[in-house]
Image (cartoon, one colour):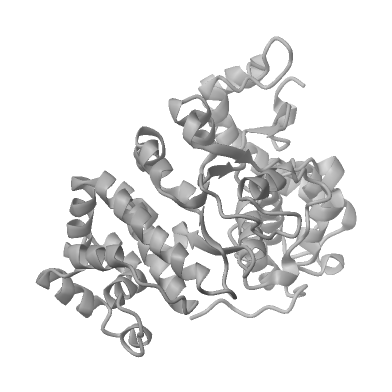
Length: 432
């Protein structure tokens, strides 16, 4: 069953509860998008475009000889996914890039994800995108790789069984890479289920990853030659990996830190979303030389109050559901975290069937949420907040301390550029 169809702003309270869930996906509802460019620095976006050799019209002036790898991060609830999707849509056009967005959390089983799977998703999504875009190209290297991975009888039989109901894959294929299309169509089933196919391919990659990278680069060279023959198509390829911060940290460490030179050798521009913890560990690691780093700035509620209000009022008709002063207090208590704002609003809708008043919000909803967040703090966490150890002697964020970033990652501390502060839900419990 698909996602329900909503007419926004919704008027039904039960619909309002559903559309204010922090994980409610707005990608099918562009009318819910709120432009935050006027209240959030866009320096990170301009730098990414410059790194990708794009001009002011987002056109690719000259394909890069040196391919950039950008690690992109932001605080939980800051809107990373929305910004990456917007960027992908902007750049996916004929005079720019074939821009491929991989929604890692939805397309793969993140708890079962292995470092080798990164290369598999690269290749299968590349083949599918080129097939869907009718790009004509010949690739000896891709043919060899398909034979190496997908020609064993057990693998062929298993893949045919898994994809037997995928009629759109098995019929009308006009390219030589049917096996890769089948694998891509069922990649979540194949790699989440610890199948023979998954084990076989992972073993092949583990045995000689450098050789695979060389072969992948040969494929990319052949693809780019094919793109040159197609004047109406893009000039190069860009991969954007979103949602991958949900992958186990050990996998991140192996793939992007310990073996970062392998990622760097792939002749492909990439933007890779990483968790805030990884972002700063990469910063302090020798792997820094292989990445460009961009951090999505946290919103400041004083500057973005109108835009944050719009995020809510585009979803539901506010005048029938909540008093205006209560709505404004939710925005203030969000601390600039869109996720926290939605969580407070959603909790308020669940907690009362009446119109949400300022009194109910203060004495029932916020008090409970404050207690729940405070209860998660260990004695060590409380000592850090009591002593304001999150500030150095110059009252600047103490970003070098891993204990501080643990609190940032947990949304106990909010960092705004050069300022760091306690989450507004529990700020009154600690020294100002």
